[in-house]
Image (cartoon, rainbow, N blue to C red; front, top):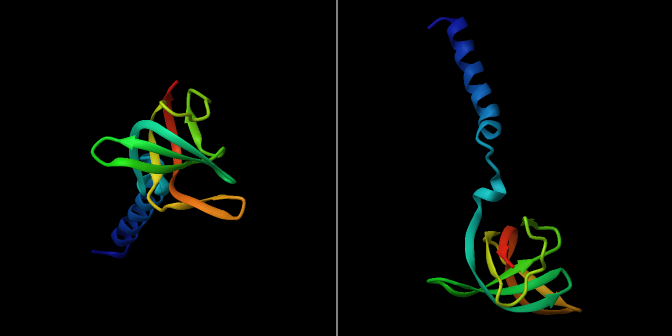
Length: 116
């Protein structure tokens, strides 16, 4: 191969690496997120939001941390017991503090939708 072909191939690979995340809307946080869905069974207030206990089918009750910064889909309703939720959450648990006491940990919700 001559020098011109090598430089064209390197340029094509470089453009592919740069454009791939833009073309396919790859979001690193979303790729590391786990989907969840279920009924909210109880809510615990925290300094940084609400600790929701969601009854997830086949997994039982899992804690999720809802903060005012996550993105609700269509309904802008604060989660409450008996509400159905569907969304994605990070897989790294975050502590829920009330005052200076840690009352639990939950998976932080990235975005969610809910049945009112």
